[in-house]
Image (cartoon, rainbow, N blue to C red; front, side):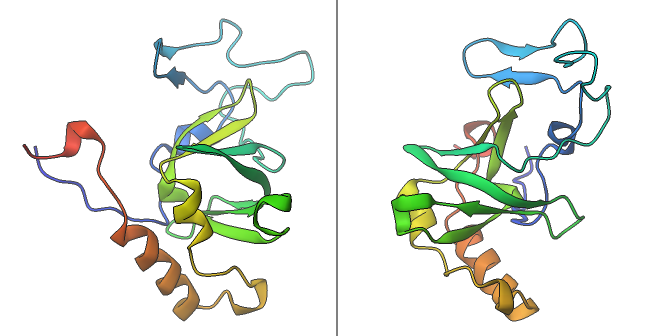
Length: 154
């Protein structure tokens, strides 16, 4: 199998950002909500973009905060996570490529990094979201990327 190139800014699974999403859990594998992912009569239909703002973010070793902003732009996807008291109320920028999966039922986004890796990332400053800052953040996460087991060469 050809090793994949990690792009920190690209969503691994863009379908996770749409209604009617097929949810994958480690214990049960793919499953489909029988009504297409709807929670009620006012819920978005299948394929409708989902706003991730307010979802909790779960690192490999614990919760890191709540999504304050989300971008689904091509090659610029990212989450701005409000860490609350965990990092003294700071916000962190988490590239979309770190998102393993999204659980819409529990409003959780799982990332493939530890709390310490996220804490050690370049500090988020909305005023400095320029190409140089974006490159620094992207390099930080790309340098620490470990491919999933099925993509590793043994």
